[in-house]
Length: 180
Image (cartoon, rainbow, N blue to C red; front, side):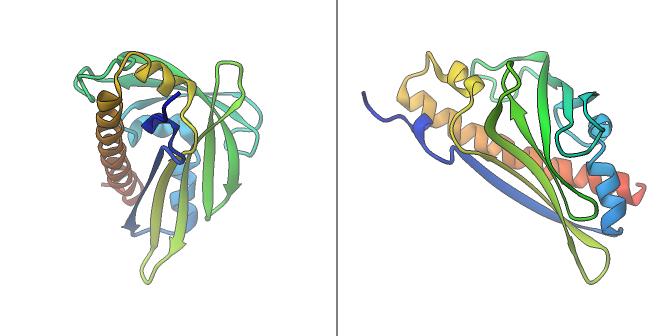
């Protein structure tokens, strides 16, 4: 068996930050309320807490997502409306909020999203990050019928998409928090 780029660890690791003219708690109140994600996420249209205390460690959020046809348009991705579930893994008010994506059986995957809030001279710096260690079941499904050249192109294109999503998310969160 030959090694594929899909076997790389981490498969994805992206990070972005933005200054926000607000307190760490004001920012945290927005990013920890995943039901508001339609206000700032390029794909998540909101959703609902399906177990646990909302926004607390162990709580599970079911997100409703919407992906356009032109997002890495050549790849066999889920398009239109689709759903995900995530478990909150860190919830430190004014500091950090993170979640892990779950399988359909609600098992943790090595797909972790998060926000960290750092103090700044004026306001705060909001950091958004994503790390996928081993490829998820969804990634394996996407690349199942791709050859290695196409798999490498998918990882390149998806990394660009993720970087763009993080930047867009941060800009939208700043607008929400600063009341623009």
